[in-house]
Image (cartoon, rainbow, N blue to C red; front, top):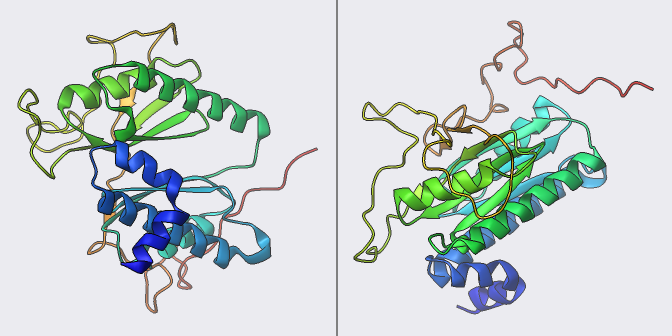
Amino acid sequence: MTARVLACLLLAAPLLGGCLSDRTLGEALDDSSAATEIKTRLLGAAGFSGRFMEVDVAVVDRFVLLSGRVASEQDRKEAERIAWTTTTIDEVANELQIEYWDMARDLNDAWITEQIRTRLIADNDIKGTNFNIQVHSGVVYLLGLARSEDELRRAAEHASVVTGVKRVVSYVKMRERGSPPPDISVAAAPTVNQQGQPVALDATQGAISIAPGATKPAPIVPPQSQPATRSQYRDPYAPGALPPPGSNGNTSGLQSSPLPPLSN
């Protein structure tokens, strides 16, 4: 109990959001502790190189979203491996991109994030504290727990109409814990059809508008690949691990594919 109280004091800001959301204090604390642990391990592994400084870690309901930038495929895989060393998580979605640092792009992403956050808070049909927003290179990643199919759809549509958004990728889950309010009908996430196959959402049907945004909504799409679960994950550095796709049949396991040097 003492450890939990200490962690609560250290993680006051994230927990405040957790207390205002539908998650319990214990759930918010566990998620915040897991995110902090993963980030700490990433920074420790990077040392003075700073190669994981631009990796963002978000955890909701034992689900980890890694987003941001790294310099090589090796760093991308290593970041996921480090995330899996935290025992209090069940799934990891690796959305890390191999890109250069760009100040103008980062400022634009920050502006998009605040525009989406403002729209979610302003919509009375959405509980904005249930959603985590990550934006990288104009791509929006939504993470959280929706109370209904309509809330999930509305949140994605709000993100899709903000100027500068290229596409919206939703990792939002339907709320499963506890009993929903009587006026809410919990339905399956709209990113999956009756055959269980991922489908794109149509942001033009019944789209909402709280404030002027993009003239044409950005596409709302499911993740390109499903998040890895603990039973599915395989350490690419383990003895005898198969080389990754695109390694041209080498037998030395995971190899780095760094970015080319910046041109003058």
